[in-house]
Length: 505
Image 1 (cartoon, rainbow, N blue to C red):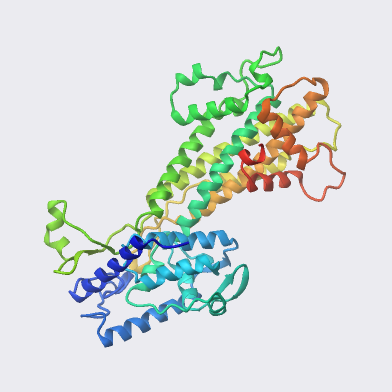
Image 2: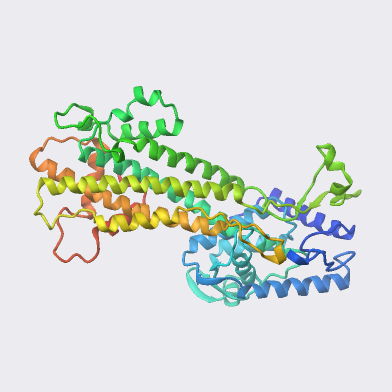
């Protein structure tokens, strides 16, 4: 990974604006003014580059960076991709040039990512108005404090830096605040969630298409004449996708045994999956914006007034105008991620509904199998008890957390979003929903096998045939009396490891 010269120039310019604004006496949160409830305290005055100020700022920064190793609580973040996503998210937002960070931390984050040096992060501590405790763990590793993994091997951060050939950071000015004042831990995980959700919904369509064939279901709710009268774009797109998956299926031909109307869990899927895809599209757009903009406080930017109020005396307090520099160093609330946390919560609710439909279909299919022949105990199918247990967990995880009971920093921080918790809950919903889809897939596969025992000519179309073959390659229809693990767990891992496009082609 390389940083573009233009991005490096933005970082340098933002840092120069910060320093020059301090020289002019502009009050800067977390720099020449204290953080949190200490915002009224002046930490230094005059030129940050004067010998006394430089020595004081360097020592203070280093002390804060080292202290970050003791931040956070709970177990360590187990997944390296989450740690790397956190670092990359912060690096990218720094490259906007609005954080005031000096160029060195930016270069160091890039070097750590390139050499696969991942700080040990603690999972708990963030309340969602910037992930201070978790980002402090990142900061600690940059100066050689705390623990880290280098190419998967655990060691002290000091050892990891040495072996990676990276010199410990010598922080200056407002570097500590610039590194930790970000929602990068939540945003990085949200980016991974977007990808995981897209794969889950693709599998949900494929598995539903197989279930509908197993049930000998009615395709009329998916057809264009009825979809045209209810023109929600994502619902219509889901219906079209499922019909494409059913190309060549026996469901497109008449059957004397087909119901006029199936249970709602079979009939309403374009609505359920369409709603989930609309939520996914909104979250994707929100996270792209988050990752490519600044959530720093203060905002440091070259700026010219566009509105009369921007020239008012209060606004002028934070404006720097000299022959060499023109811009703002302005306190703000851009660190508040409410707008995209709500998208996460909407996604969680939508996925819970997708999961509920999967459970109901699996139960119907299991009942169909039992009616066909109740004594084939050695045949693999979904576990109803496990499915209901998983669904109960999903439903509890989908409940949003308003986060209005905060009294941090002497009441200054009186609202929180718990962004990282919202991401964690939604990510867990994705995991458990994938388990439910694995159970549904087992039930659908066995139901089709049973139907083919008596009706050999039961075309499923290319995708249906490929799906059934893919299942049976990993989970045979019959298993030994003492299987080593639940067959659904095998499918759960396979569903998470690949996309339908790769698995079924």
